[in-house]
Image (cartoon, rainbow, N blue to C red):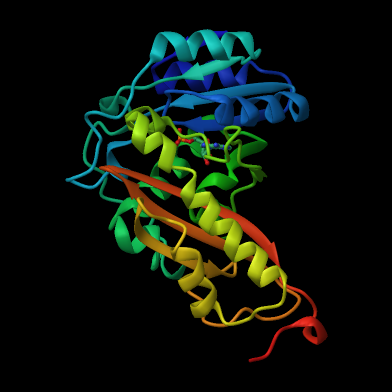
Length: 286
Ligand code: AMP
């Protein structure tokens, strides 16, 4: 496995790879969710490139950029064991020798939910993902469903900007009690960790009720909200995954995503679950 920190060297080493390349962009502090992305890339591509970059552009001024977990040695060991060809782990000055003048700004897809709560976040994500795609020029790139709105934006980025890389979505990897794996879970105290699965419990309630044919999203969310305590809600919503706008009514016979963000103490958790609503004749009208 090559460990590379410079863009020039990355370009040379990537050019020397003879077969199809799969890219897995990460911010490091790797866990089994990241490993699942790498394993999928490993199965589907001749070569795998993983990037580790804690992207300053996607953190707000009051967010956890400086204290975001960094564990380069452990990450390298894990990736070596997974058969990764190249790890690209640039310093911020390598990616941004100057503050960028040209940025990628998602519009409607980044308006609500994460985009509303974290102004500038998706601009930072989209700009850096485009830079990484340009630097690596992979045939395939792998992203987690865990960050559903980010995934929708990256799929749209590839479509709108004619990026040839095929974007793959990978299922969310969870702890036994349902909590989605996240690098930020290390922030949780024991009590917070115990409460953290309430977020997925609330989302499961949304999935159950919409799946049973209840179409009034406002009412369904009010019920699901009861499951969150002692977590503090940031948002709960139901969206069409191609739009990411809050829905009041769940249309019959569609695939929707229940999304949520909640605080366990100072730590912000996000999660989502896919739901298929039943055909019209099975919808509950009240
Ligand atoms: P991050 O390092 O948090 O920026 O995440 C890097 C990639 O891993 C993103 O595409 C995430 O969506 C994905 N990811 C993070 N957590 C999980 C998880 N629990 N299951 C699957 N993918 C994940």
